[in-house]
Amino acid sequence: MTSARAPILPGATVGVLGTGQLGRMFAIAARRMGYRVHAYSPDRDTPTGQVADKEQTAAYEDLDALREFARDIQVVTFEFENVPAASVAAIADLIPVRPSGFVLHTAQHRAREKTFLAKAGLPVTPFALIDSETELHAAVARLGCPAVLKTASFGYDGKGQVKIARSEDALAAWATLGRQPCVLEAFIDFDREVSIIAARGVDGAIAHYGLIENSHRHHILDISISPADVPPSLEREAVRIAHATLEALDVVGLLCVEMFLTRDGRLLINELAPRPHNSGHLTFDACVTSQFEQQLRAVCGLPLGSTEQLRPAAMANLLGDLWSNGEPRWVDACAFPDVKLHLYGKTSARPGRKMGHLTAMADTREEAIRQVLAARGALTTVPQEERRDAYQQR
Ligand SMILES: Nc1ncnc2c1ncn2[C@@H]1O[C@H](COP(=O)(O)OP(=O)(O)O)[C@@H](O)[C@H]1O
Ligand SMILES: [Mg+2]
Image (cartoon, rainbow, N blue to C red):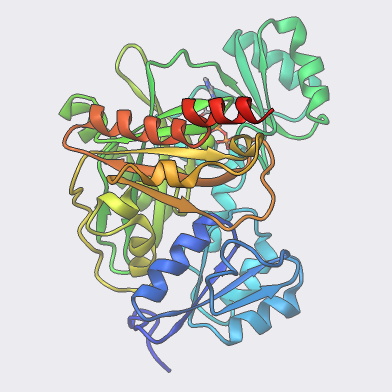
């Protein structure tokens, strides 16, 4: 039997649980390095499945299907956190699960995650656990308003959260979330949102990317920019937080730490993602090693790659809303030679759904932002002459 620390080499098969765009880009990176990829989720013809060697369609609760999946792969990783603990345990009996079930279990539940971070001495947004009306009222009194109430489990892209403006609104807010276990957080009037992505190998080696600056629209990531426009001391503090979190959780794999930068210059952890993150998509084009290749290297026990960024970069998400007047004008966006187009192969474009992204690279971050916004704007802007032609044909 091979040692648990022996590297899993090119030619081997890696498994990924979850089949969205993160798994797709992971699979592309893995196949480029000669690995085979098997993907698992309850869905068919998925972003990951389309580029994987094999797409297995079964429920995350189906332990027999998971064991069958595990038999053909050498290691499993995630692109989706909400896999039940019993499912992860069934796989872990057969092959390495990286990051571990413990990391997943902690990060998939806001209350567990925040409690863990606070106990580890890491700076988190002030919070309280809510499982009863009494706890809710006490928490609102302690944290004050405005506050944000978030379901402990299954939240993403702002789903499962409600802002509470006045203490009288708290009970109604909890009712709209189905009175399920929640976390109440102080509303942070932040200066900016930032994130840091780092990987930790089987041997404990850590490599981090620089601080990324993020802006959200309607609670969904809109734009990410790297490098962030912050003083070096702040970036060092973010790196310290990321290293400490990776070590406290004993992560083998990738971790993104989302943070708020407060107006008085403090960093507070908002949430963790133990997998590639939307804010790191720009590493695919702008860095020597993308976050997806880094995840692969970490979970396969290979040495981590250089995280050096080659040019300033800006990423803009492409949401389903862009399809509201028909197919976006791909040719016009591709007319920007320093902008890279990524599409995830999703067949239906619903508003708010992440369909793809653009990454622009330039000599300065300002120019990268300008290019990426112009390219995204071009996707839905009908040029003057076409509008005139359409008018004349009427
Ligand atoms: N406590 C807070 N104070 C201010 N803004 C917040 C707070 N919590 C969340 N937000 C806003 O909502 C976004 C999504 O919330 P987040 O907790 O990251 O959930 P999700 O899992 O949906 O990404 C954040 O990126 C931020 O813009
Ligand atoms: Mg978030």
